[in-house]
Length: 351
Length: 111
Image 1: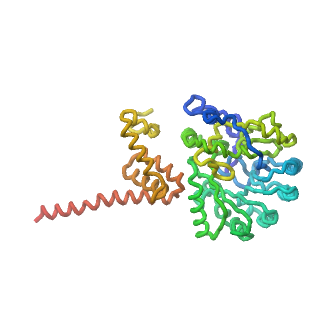
Image 2 (image 1 turned 180 degrees about the vertical axis):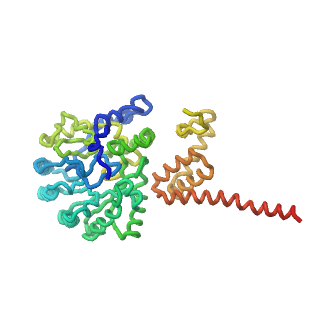
Image 3 (image 1 turned 90 degrees about the horizontal axis):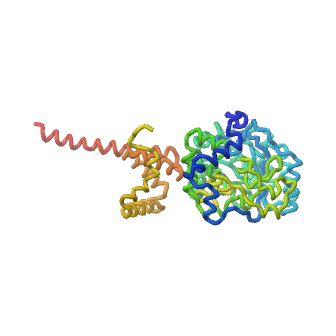
């Protein structure tokens, strides 16, 4: 298993270095317009948020997998973890504001020792929807996680899981040897308790991301392929497939540079810029929170250490809905990933 | 840079052919765009056909472009290689079927 960029003390584990790459080169010499220029041309810069609907909480960077494209640089060697005190602050905000969705991500969020406490607490506070972004293999990684499907069901958690392709070849090359077969086992366990089964009310969505330096395909067409292949070959059902574009940060940025695909990939993203996608970008209705309680416009900005604008208050302990709704969203060239083609967000396409 | 007939950066300049003759270029690119839209064939099927033809034509620009396009249309690696085999089989078959002509000529010339 490879190590995280952080454990390898790789130069791209520095967010300053990543931003230097993203703001330099083609964007510095004027070969490509910056994201700010492009959105300014539409008269939509700076980007301003709509109402906050989603609280996306990153409960820690620890993960049982080390996926090659991971924008979090997650892995077993990452020890950053959210404490119960910080979770408590998140729950207080949820209760006070009535934000309807709690979206839990990581790392593998289930590895946080207070994960279940947090989910149960959110339900008690009356949050309308809880999403867990599960990597699937965590469910099969240790007997202590075998009952996660039942736990999700009992707490009415919506499960959103990464599965980059419907075959082992592409999945394992991106996510690690044996990940596909373990993911299939986990999907069967989720189906068994009712997830992805029509009329059960238990939602199981899958997330596709391209296994390389290319853009995602049409979401609807790929969903039909995934449904047919998973049903015919493995007897597995799920609800929706979300296609997500790989953003050029962290380990995917490292891959792009190491394989000499970076410039072409950025050109591709800029060329595919879709003005209609700008209105639907997820930073408009989401606040991302890191394990220490700092706030960001999205999980990608979190990984670049680009906190929300200072005047909005940057820590969950200073949460002020009014100030946050007035803020200016922080952007850089990675944002082109969310506006390419049909757009991309944690809920799939946006345009 | 070494002098070569093919430069990957030239692919991006394809549109520049309009510089010398805009009207015909416009007609070509309109037609080209129309051809690849969803029709009786899906965009993925069209990409795979284009990939096969790119190999038959041995056009390096087209091979790069339609490898990328096939992946972006959700084609699998197996489908892509089968498409290349289809192109190769037709190329091979097209050469071999001329063996009949050779045989005809042999028979005509021989006692």
